[in-house]
Length: 432
Image 1 (cartoon, one colour):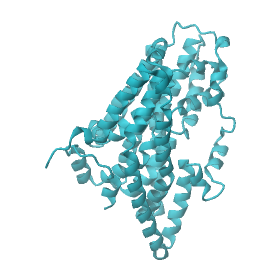
Image 2 (cartoon, one colour; image 1 turned 90 degrees about the vertical axis):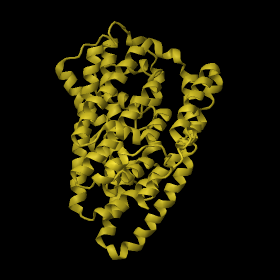
Image 3 (cartoon, one colour; image 1 turned 30 degrees about the horizontal axis):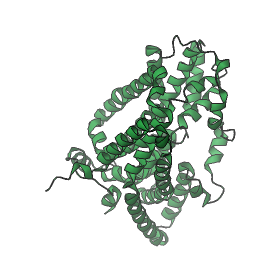
Image 4 (cartoon, helix red, strand yellow; image 1 turned 120 degrees about the vertical axis):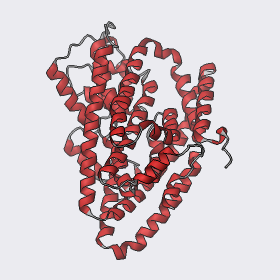
């Protein structure tokens, strides 16, 4: 079999586009900053596909699981795993910031910080309580679940739809066949859209470097280093041992998902790869129903990259502004972050939104300190998104194995196979 040319591989094309975009942004900053619409258009095209693909995948998955007891048990196990991983992620950020102390010695006067830069990250209508959050999951209409493109309302509608089909399997058979046909078509459309990923990556990197500049990293470089160290420690010291405990090497999974990871790196967002992850995890041998339930839920409840960012950034602000934190204050902060880290969208800038929401309920920490992070947040969002995607992929595999819903033979064959082919449509392969 002829070996595919490296230039035909999607992740190679994306890497080359990123390098070109960084070059354009550095040499011609104004031109680079004007290329942001290329990235926005690509992410918009993919986001357009997320809600219908998630709906079709979950409905099909629930009908394959059939038993309501199995579905309930799967959701409970997934939520327990999400909170366990989130707690470890918060701890990783906290330990790293106290060991490296990136904010020590800055002596920032919070009264001199420009609060106007935070206006775009403050969302007064954002639900703060558990009841408000739960009510916000319910869409105003069935079509409204698809209109905003948010995952949780679509997840709720999909569950209800799947349960209704299970209640009357014979009558629901034509409906399910129609949904499967729609899903096949949607994944084909997605495969065409993903060919534009290099263009989106080019625009994203040109804008980032052109708008913020490499030099903007300098003064807060230690904070960035601390954050990347914390994310790396979480992946290496938490996810890798858990993967080994479940019988596979994490680096092999990362190699299998390398195209998705490169796209996340380029766009600073987890959203563009959600539909592809659904297909690739199913192709890996995980049950369609488990994948359809756990992965979309993880996108709202298992944002470990954001969790690391919250503890690290909060304590950094305390260090930089000379605000001492006691043990009870840290415990309160962690408890609040277990809630504020949930439900944040996996897009660039969501970390700052969650951080502002966190600090507004912790009076000891100045919200104005978030202004210190605005200039470099874009350079940290890549690590946030990558960490969350890796964690969610692992979570799907773990839950699948716990439920005995993972084809171990197929799983080993796919992970150990030479990764030389560009799989444009893994979902279609999994379903075909």
